Length: 545
Image 1 (cartoon, rainbow, N blue to C red):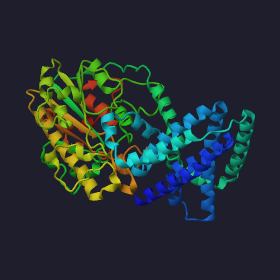
Image 2 (spheres, rainbow, N blue to C red; image 1 turned 180 degrees about the horizontal axis):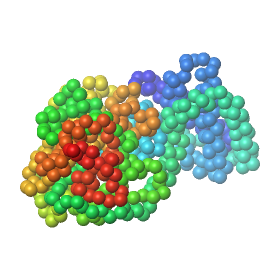
Image 3 (cartoon, rainbow, N blue to C red; image 1 turned 180 degrees about the vertical axis):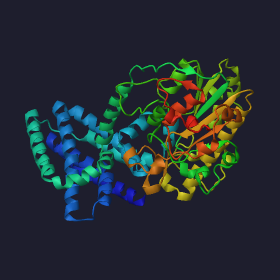
C-alpha cells in the first residue's frame, strides 16, 4: 500500500513539473498530443506495467522488448484516437481528455485497490450497481486518487494553451506515428504469444481503452438482449396438490465458507441441525457477476450461447401457466419479468417490524400471509438477497450476528488483516443461516401445503486470495472462489412423500449447476412441457425406484 502511494506521489509531482513548462510556452497540437499520450501511459497504466513485470521472466532483454511492445500498442491506440479528436477540434480533444483523466483516476483506484479487471463483465457489474451499493466504496483513498489523478490533471490540461496546427500537418504526424509504432509491433511478433496469453488481464488494465471498449461491447450485448421475449411452449400439470416452492437467490456467497461444505467455523449451525436439508456437492455458477448469473438461473437453456433469441424467464413462464409468482428483492439484476407481485425492500419495509427490516430479513416480512391469500394451488416465490455483497460485509447483518471477531470495518479491504476480512464475511454467512431457518419455519407453518425451497448463490467472492477481491473476474481466469457456490434444498415431509424423493440419492449428486433450477422447479410443480428437460430436474433424478 505504501508503495502505491509513493508511486502516486512521484507521478503527480512529475506531472506538475512536466506541465509547468507548458504554461510558459505554447506547445503545438502535435506536441500536446504526444505529451498527453506519454502522461496517460505513465500516470494511468502503471498498474498494467506492474502486472507485466510480475509475470515476465525478470529484467531480461526479452522481457524489456515485450514491455516495449505493450507500450507501443498503448501508444498507438492512444495517439490515433487523440489525433483524430484534435483534427476535428482542439476543444473537443481537450474536453475528451478531461473526461478521460477523471474517469481514469477512478478506474485506477479500483484496479489497484481491489485488483479488478475492467472487462465486459465488470463493466456490466458497474452499470447494474445501484447507488446504495456503490456508496459503500466511498473512502478517503478514493478521494485522493480522484483529486491527484483526476482533478489535477484535468485542470492542467485545461490550463495549457495549444497552438493551432493545420489539419494536414496533424494528419501527416498521425500517419508517421502509425507507421513507426506499427512497424515496431509487427517486428516484435515473437512477443505476441506472451501478450496473447495474458490478453484479458492486460486488456482489462489499459487506460482508458479497457472501460471505453468494454462499455461499447456491453451496450452492444445489452441491445441484442433487449428484444421481445419468445414465449415458451405451454405446460400441463400432472397433479393439483397445494404446492409452494421458494427460490432464494443468494449474493456473493462462496461454498468454502459454509460449514455445510466442511468449513471449520460453525457458519451454518441451524442448517446443519435441520432435517431434510440436502447440500449439493460441486455446485458452480454460470458467471461471476449478478446479471448474467440471474439470467442463467431463470433460463431453460444456456442464455450465453446466443443473443439472437431471448426466451421468457422462469417467473414469467410460471405466471403465464397459472402459477402465482411473487418476487421479493433486496437486490437487482433480474431480466424483464411479468409476475403477480413484485416487491422491493422499500415496499416490504413499510409493513415490516423488528430489527431485521434493514437486512435480508425484510424479504420474509408477511410472506406467510401473502402465500395464504393466494387462491392458486401452485405458488412460486423468489427471494433475491443482498447476502454477502462486498466490500462492506459488516453492514449486511444485525449486530447480534457479529459472532466472529475482530472484523473488517473498512471498504479498503487490503487495509484489513485476512482474519478481520474473513470474520466479517463469515458473519454474513451466519446471518444467512438464520434467514434460511426462518424461511423453513414459515413454510412449515403453512397448513395442508407441500413446500420446498432451493438456495443458490448468484456467484462467489474473492477475499484477498492472490490479491483479488470481490467478484466479476472473467470466468476463464476467475479463481474458484468466484464460481464455486453453495447450493442446497430443503423439502417438507409431504413434498418428499408426494414426489417419492430419496434424500440419499439427492445428496449423492456429484455435480450441480444453476442450469438445474428451471427444470427442477418445473419438476417440483409436476409440470410437463416440450422444453422440460428431465435430465436437469434434480427431483426427478432422485426419485425412489
